[in-house]
Length: 216
Image (cartoon, rainbow, N blue to C red; front, side, top):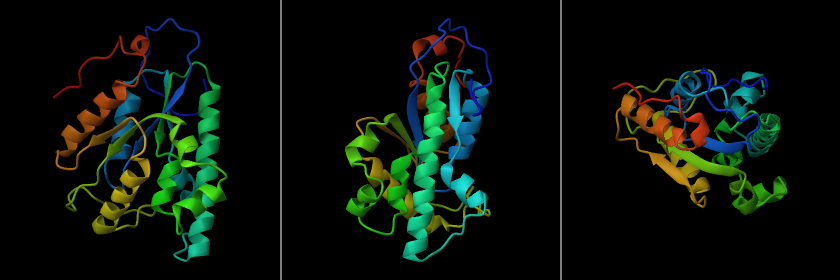
C-alpha cells in the first residue's frame, strides 16, 4: 500500500482501487488527537492511512524552534512543505480510501507570524485551494483545565497557550463546509468515542461493514 501507518483490520471490501480523500484531524496541543489517531489505527481497516504530524517530524528531527519572526516563518515553511509531501505520498496508493491527516496545511495559520495574506502569498496558494484539498475537518478542542495535559520535548505550550492556539486553528478552518467539532466539555473517553464516530462516517460504506460500535 504505502509506508504510512494504516488501520489494523482486514476489510471485506472487494474494491481493488479507491479514490482516496484527505480528512483532517486538528485542534490545539493536548486536545487528544494522538489518542484518537491511535484508536483509529486499531479500529479501522487497512484502507485507512494515517499521515503523521508534519510539525513533529520537523521539530523532532532537530529543526530549531525560534521565537523570532524570521525563525517562525522558516519553521512554518518547512512544516507546510512536509505536510504537502506527506499528503502526496499518501494519495498515491489507490488501495487507500481515506487518509487521516494529523493536522492540515491551514493549521499553519495559527502559528504564522504575519498576516493571512502573507501566508498565502508565501506558499503561492489561496484559502479556497487549501480548503478544497480536504473532504472534512474534525476539530478536537483543548480542555480548559490542565487535567490530562502534559508537556514534552515537542509540545511546550502551557494550557492557556494551547487554548489560544486551538481558537486560532478553529478560525483557520471555519470556512470549510464540513467542519465537525468535538467539544472540550466532554470527558476524555467521550471525546475519543465522538471523534472516532465522526471519522468513521468519512469511510466509504464498503469499508464500514466490519465495524461495530465502540465499547462503552
